[in-house]
View 1 (tube, helix red, strand yellow):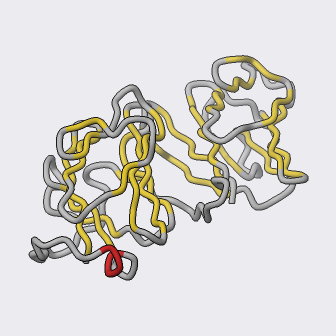
View 2 (tube, one colour):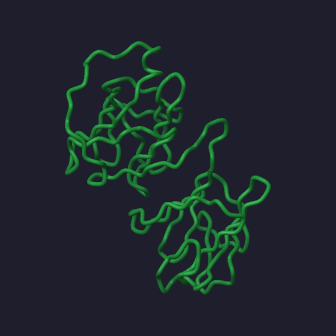
Length: 218
C-alpha cells in the first residue's frame, strides 16, 4: 500500500497509508492529511491514485508544492520521492516490486518499545531454521540501549529521516538490510553495506545515524 511519511526537521509526525482514489492535503482540518502550519494552504494539494499510479496535484497553493526540490503543478510520484510543502517533507513510499511492502515502522532512539533484556543464543541457526524464526533489533547504545524492535512486518524501516534510513526486509531465506536514504551508509560489523541488500546473520552489529544495534534471531 502506498504511504506518505510526513516529517519536519527530521522528526516524523505522520505516517499515512493512501487508500483512496483522492487524498487531500492542507491546513484545514477536513483534509485527509492535515498539516497545521501557516505556510501550508487550507487546501494545498491532492494525491490521485488510479491504474496503479500515484500523482500529486498542487491546488493553486500560496507557497507551492515541490517534488524533489522542483515546483510542480501535477507530477507522477515514484518510490522515494520527497514532496515539500512549506518546511515539511513528505516521503512517498510505494510497494516494492515483487515484495509485500507492509506498513513499516520508523525507529528512533527513545521510541522503541521496551522489552526485558533476555540473553540470546550465541550460535547462529542453520539457514533452514532461520526461515522459521522471528527476529529483533536490540539497541546497544544511546538513551534507548537495551530496548528491542521486533521485526514483525515484511519491511521495517530504521533510522532518522533526513540523516540515515535503512530497511530490513523479511524474505524466505532470511532478513536483508538495505540503504534507503541519507548520506551515511549503514555499517554492519564496521563495514558499509554498499548498494545491494545485505543478508543479516544472528549477532550482526548495525551502526546507523550514530546508533549501534544488534540483529538477533529469537
